[in-house]
Image 1: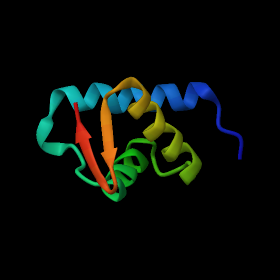
Image 2: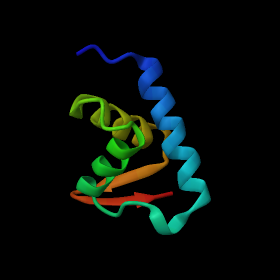
Image 3: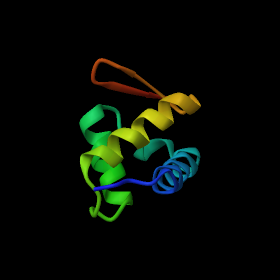
Image 4: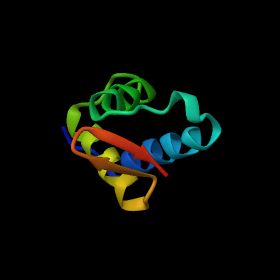
Length: 73
C-alpha cells in the first residue's frame, strides 16, 4: 500500500487541531495514540500511516514520546 504525503499531512493536521481543543481526550500512551489516529482515519489505513503520523507529530513538536508515554505540548 502506497501512502501519500498528503494523507499523512491531512491526518496530522486533524490530530493537531483536535489536540488544541480538548486536553481530556488526548491519548497518554503509544498504543492508545495509534488507536486514536486509527479512529480518526476511519480504520481504513495500515500501521505504516499511523507510524508516519506519529513521527510527523513528533517532528512538529506536538508530542514527545518517552518509551511508551506520550506527552502533549
